[in-house]
Image (cartoon, rainbow, N blue to C red; front, top):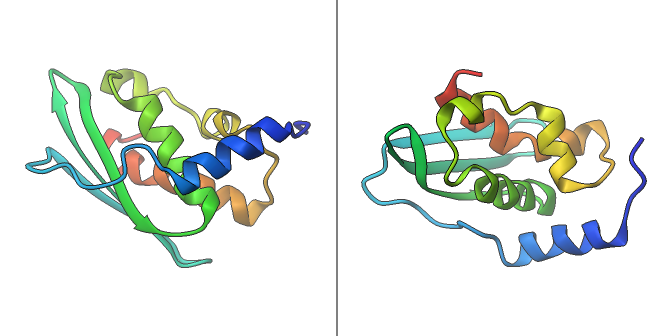
Length: 123
């Protein structure tokens, strides 16, 4: 089990209150949606690809602090990445980027953005 660091809690709060890449990419190459039926969180990912690389990505949605912060962190991570590299991302890496130990219900919230992206990259 990961030991929680207060800095990570601050990072989560910062990404929740001031999310990166929040919005909609106009004339997007992909438009993906995900929902968590357990809690009602929903997410939409839009983005543009240039030569197999994520050139722009944005998200919108309604959800808890964890799902919103995770989407913010994840979109920052994959911006500029090749699709082949995104395909290699594992759920544990997404969770590790948050730096928190989460309950199973919160884990589903944190992985909502990953699950939505999986629809596009066929992970």
